[in-house]
Length: 459
Image: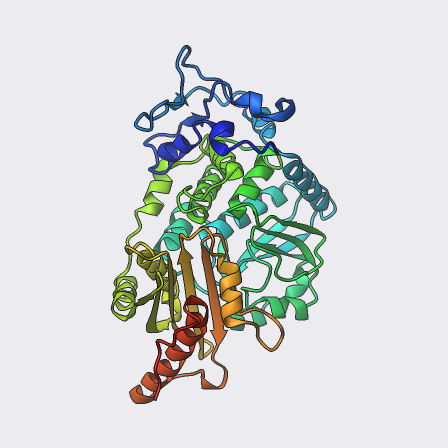
């Protein structure tokens, strides 16, 4: 890729956010219109839409001027061929390799496994994989072991009809895994799913692994597409669509809903495109031709529950700020409210003079009678790597697995409580147990945040 800056290469791509961040009232095609950017593209390999507005410079010379966006409501003529030209060599090669893999598994049945608490990026990509695989006669079941608790995730499943199933560990024990010819991991590499050990015990081969996080565990799948430099797995799957692994039918309701879910997943994992890179913008441009803005708007308007607001309130009361880090423990949470923790971290990181927020609590799984210390990190500090920070802070378990990790500007961790896990019949005992874990988590974090200080005093 030519090392020219994004501003030179993509001209008005920043205006794509203006076009699709607040969903439009009707489906339109947002075409990137920059008049001369092609000269930066080696060999003319990347093709840009021409502006229908002749004689106008679409990139404003003043910071106060907004570039115009050409809205073309005519047919999607030659859109597939045009989008294919936007792909780089790696994307084309990976799409061809996935096509070859699927051709070798015609008529199979795949178990698509998501992380325990799937997000829009994971669910939308799994649905896309299901649609692509169906062309090869491959039947797919999309499963997760945890829960959907974030209001937008619940709304996405209900309104778009995302075909996901919850398999608790008890449910998984009743399943006949011999019915599956392969396992597919999407937006994870098995380290965030309780189902992985069961799948390994059932000796289901790993057929496909597609993720945008750093390599975590080498499962030796037949096909792997792991690209940490890309902000969202939805971008990778959109590139598969651009490579025509699935012919999009604008009249197919499932296609439109799935691409709307992909748009939501891409926006969610790029912080509403504010952290997007070139590939993400190109993917969003492609999806903008098909997605349903009214459906996306309905998903985004999902309201927070009272329990989520209570957790955010607790994080505000309990927070401590040191060296621009905000650290907050929120006590005990129900398993179904686990997604309130990252929402609290999202809120705290917006405070003045705070660049990184870490929120954690003890999550109680009533089905398994287990407790976990679960936490989320959010950061807007460019030089802070959440993946390295969390791994250095909390280390590994007895099997050599890290307790957490991250991606650009976000991360999370989950630490089993072992012998101390379980129901707390005594309020006094529950309080003491929380205090012990609260102090321990803070000590781990403060060794990195302020290694020369010892802000926590214990008697």
